[in-house]
Amino acid sequence: MISHSDRHEAVELIEEACGLGLTQKAACTALQLSPRTYQRWRQGAEAVKADGRPDAQRPAPANKLSQAEREAILDLCNQPAYQSLPPSQIVPQLADEGIYLASESSFYRVLREADQLRYRGKAKAPRQVSRPTAHRATDANQVWSWDITYLASTVVGRFFRLYLVMDIYSRKVVSWEVHENELADHAAQLIRKACWAEGITGKGLVLHADNGSPMKGATMLATLQKLGVVPSFSRPSVSNDNPYSESLFGTLKYTPAYPSKAFDSIDAARDWVLTFVCWYNEVHRHSGIQFVTPDQRHRGEDKTILARRARVYERAKARHPERWQGDTRNWSRDEEVWLNPENPSPEMAEKREMVA
Image (cartoon, rainbow, N blue to C red):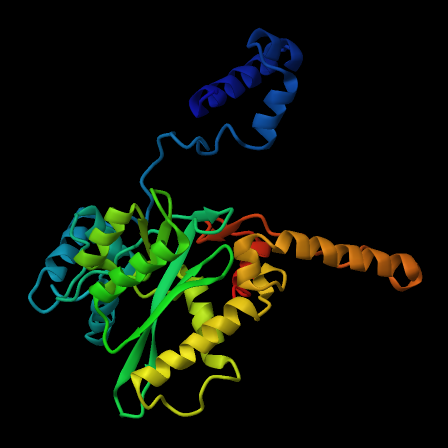
């Protein structure tokens, strides 16, 4: 790439040669330039413009802060009255006092360049937490999700805790228990029973949960390690990272069968949850799995059911083709289910809204 100074010199030499009687084409040929290049440099004034290359040397901008001004900003920010405040607080206070040193962005830039841009105050600085690892399930008992929700009792301020584990591929509730408190021991026992009931042996199962203490307790983690279960956790205070369990709790608490009054006892709560789980697994046609029941999906029976539905629609279309403007309803089976995909497609985002 020809530099700014070389371009300027080339234009001057060509103009000087033309002034001595040489043709423009001959002068350009002598410098191994095309006449069009010379014209572009001259007409576009590129020979006198600043070099546009990213690594070109440029003069300092006229509005740049001087070294004295930068030091004045640092001295002020380090004064006792301002040392615990960010520039967003300092600049307005200075304006109230009739003082202007620089813009708020300049304050931030000067502090950053001086390595003094720190979180000011006793509270912990905000931190960026990366998204949880994405998990894909192509069959039952590959990825489970679990959480705890409250069930109100007739005693004000007292709640029963429903521990519930579900398989995200089939949406089946594989295990549940109701306790009066939240303990890692209860959670460990719950997962142990679920693995025994489903015949989980060896490594490979992923168990996703929130960041609560029962989920990350030492007893719980030791049990998972012993069972060969891989733990996975949501980000702190982010419910969207555990959408399947959250949606299941929504289905549980907003179903018409949910009691209008609080539970009298923990036994009453357990009896009702047992009825709900049986209905949910064996009767409820789930919108996220093509309206088959979780039990049917868990056992692989949905393949036959969906194929039969497709044939019913095809026969209906054959009888009255004039009533169908396009293809019949899509009864195809979703072969994979994702938990926290890295880049969800619009279709995946829509399905996450229908997980229950």
